[in-house]
Image (cartoon, rainbow, N blue to C red):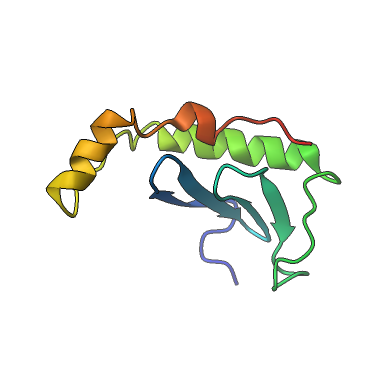
Length: 107
C-alpha cells in the first residue's frame, strides 16, 4: 500500500542552465529533463516509463505541473553549494530559472 496516498512526492535537481524535475502522485509520475517537454507516466502499468501519456491526459499533467511549480517556490536557492564556483555560476546565470523549468507548452 502507498504510505503517501494522495500526496505529491517531489524531486528537483539544479543543473547548469536548467533544472531536472519530477513528481509522483499515487500511480502517476511527471518528468521534465533538459528543458524538453513534460512527460506523464502511469508507473503502475508502465514500470519502465516507456509510454508517455501526456497527450492522452493533459489535464492531469497540467495539474501535477502546477502543484510541482507551487512546491518549487519554497526552494528558491540551495542553502549551500558544493564549491565556490557553483555558487558563482548560480548567480551569474540567474538560477534557478523556474520560469523556463515550468513552462507548459506541450507539443
